[in-house]
Amino acid sequence: MKSLAQAKMRLADVLDRHERSELALAMLVDVITACNESGCFDLVSVISDDSEVFWQARELGAKPIAEPATLSGLNDGLTFGQRYIGRRVAASELVIFPADIPLVRADDVRAVVEALGVDGVPRAVLVRSRDNGTNALALRPPEAIAMHYGRDSADAHRAAAVAAGVAVVEIVNERLSFDVDAPEDLEEMRGMALGAATAAWVDVVRSS
Image (cartoon, rainbow, N blue to C red):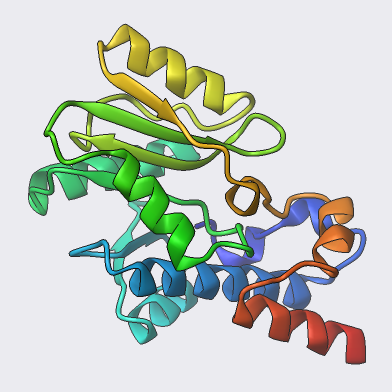
C-alpha cells in the first residue's frame, strides 16, 4: 500500500487529502478483514512504508512488512514482499490482493485460494480488474513469476506464467474486479454492498 500522503491521487479533484487517506485506510481494513475471516492464511501481511498503515495492520493482526526506502514503484515493493514471504517466511504459496477492493468478502478470498488446488503443482490464479489490471494473484510457489503490475497487468501476469510453464487459472469475480481509482468508481460504489469500514467512510462523507 502506498503512503497515505500519496493515496488515491486520481481522486484529488473530488476528495481532499484527509478524505483520500481515510478512504484508503477503510478499504485496507476491509481487505485485511476478509483475509482474516477466510481462515485461509498462516500469515496476512501488508507491504508499505507508512507508519499509520503499519499501526492499522497490527491492530487487525496483520504483519507489516516495511518497504525499503531504496525501492521505487509498486513492482519493486511487491517483489520485495514476494521474496520476503518466499524466503524468510518459507511459505509455499502466496496470494496478493490490492488494498482498494472494497467489495471483497471472505468467500471471494477462499475462492482464489481454493483455485490453487492441493496437488502441489506450480500454478497462478488470476482475477482481472475491469480495466485489465490484476485484483487477485495467487502463486505457487511464491516466486513462480515476476511482478508485472501496471497497465494491462493481467495479460502480463498470464503471459509470464505461460512462459514459465506455470498452469494458469482465471476466475471471474465481480466483487474482486471492482477497485476504486477514478471519480466515477467513487460514485458507483455508493450504491454497492461495501465492506463495513468502507461503508462507514461513505456514511461520514455523505453526512459532512
